[in-house]
Image 1: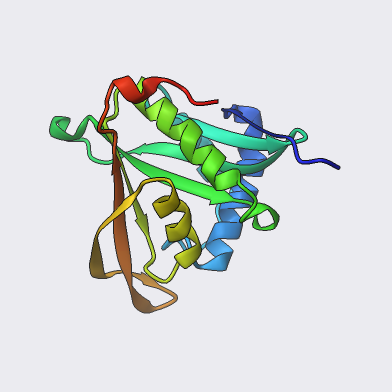
Image 2: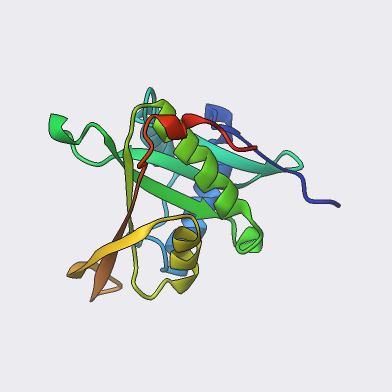
Length: 176
């Protein structure tokens, strides 16, 4: 079947698929410090906190969810209202097939529309695949937090990357 990728805002009915993809990320130990699988109750609470400016976008291929991205609060301090934290997860069998780039473009458009001037993200320095995606899409490395968290009982470093929307709000024009 031919790949037919399409993006849209996530709905409550998408949570099972979002959860499954997130749990793959937890299992793979390359995208999050989380170690325990999440359940639908956890995901429902998480989703209910993502309203207004903090959107969740999905990518579908032939009506099957294959990836998602979310804008998350970076800080509750008013000085940081223009900064969003990014989460992005791609189903294993769709990694490296353009889903990440499509999600980034759509979530960036949404971020600018929702008055964010910058996106930050946290990734593992050893996750070269993700860093390639981010760098290809204009994200720059800011630095590395040494021993930032524990994963499977061992300290791991966490890299910070960012993208500043220089032409904000001009850059809101969507590229199709």
